[in-house]
Length: 236
Image (cartoon, rainbow, N blue to C red; front, side, top):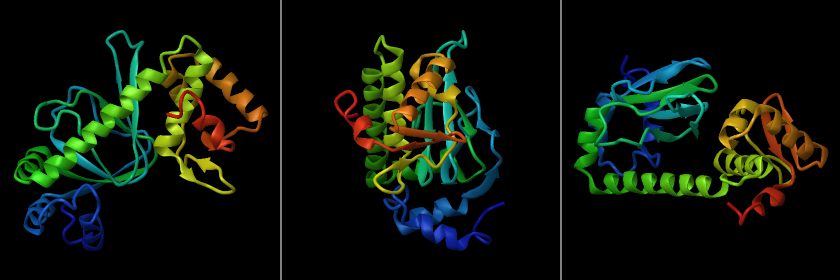
């Protein structure tokens, strides 16, 4: 179902979002004509690794997890998309297939547009091309830091660095100088991102809770001593 008749107010709101502001009014009208809305329940798959790269998404509400395992199922790429972000940027203008999978961590709501339409309109707008380049550059910088700071031989250090990256990527100001991630993050996800076991990740978090640096309740992280995490490994 196209959203022109049922979500006109929301369309007006996203018109001025960072992901769309570079388009001219005429270009955005073309996008709007092919823009659809959909809700996914927690745990549902938006697309799988190897699926035809047929849609570009804009996340309105909730959290999306991006992941890809190697053929052995041992090594995993893991990342997240939070609201008001377009995805995926990887493979834009090049790939015919998605090279990772996307899951709804929570109940989510997204707009999506056929990839060929979005890319065709984007190619005609130098400002929008520059925006896409900047986003790809930012993602590259993030992953360079992740690799740099998460290759320590110490599993404890890797868990600390993973928590810091999560805080910077997904955290929001909470109260009294604390930062809270308003989405559920499982111990398994923390362990996978850290390249360690669930038991090790759990033990590190228990120690941080005991030292009153962190709270972890119902899969939600609250960073109580933000400076401790920011000072870890040259301030990620």
